[in-house]
Length: 65
Image (cartoon, rainbow, N blue to C red):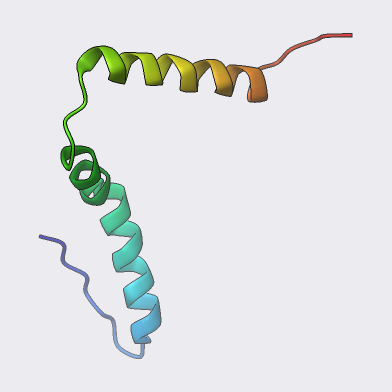
């Protein structure tokens, strides 16, 4: 359970923004989405490898000329 203390003279928008950040950091929504459908471990590993290769290609320090 998340608890957000609203301070005096603090707008509801700021408190809601803090709540959303805290909720996102817990990873509840991500976990819920991953549990909606079962994914085999081999498929999960394969997708992680593909994502890692993509990130390396996009953001890696390549000194190609």
